[in-house]
Image 1: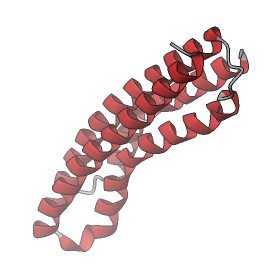
Image 2: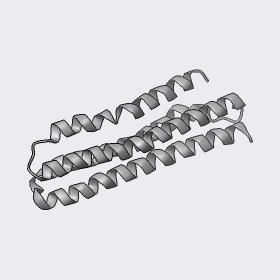
Image 3: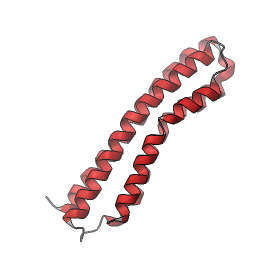
Image 4: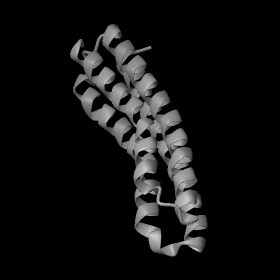
Length: 148
């Protein structure tokens, strides 16, 4: 297999997994928001912000592409192609699971807000914990790209 092809497959997997995770996470929170609006429609701004949170993992996959794009040249070595594949796969998997789990945390907060509890700030804090791992994944991808 050509090293450039290996690198592009890794990037495609990264973009796909991070996008799928974000789509699932946003769907989970969106469904919770629709249910909560039936009880408490005045909190739409809170629901909207919490619904958008899992969408950031898709952006991290996109950022990963930009960090690696300068290495996607015909003269790429097998080592570089394998490193790009591995780093991309790792970030994609982390983003996939993080977005889904973050969506579930945010959905629980949305349900609580819909029931009349003042949980927005606390839900944001708890939901952002899941955000740490894709950020660490992007940092690792950046460090790996520095060795290429």
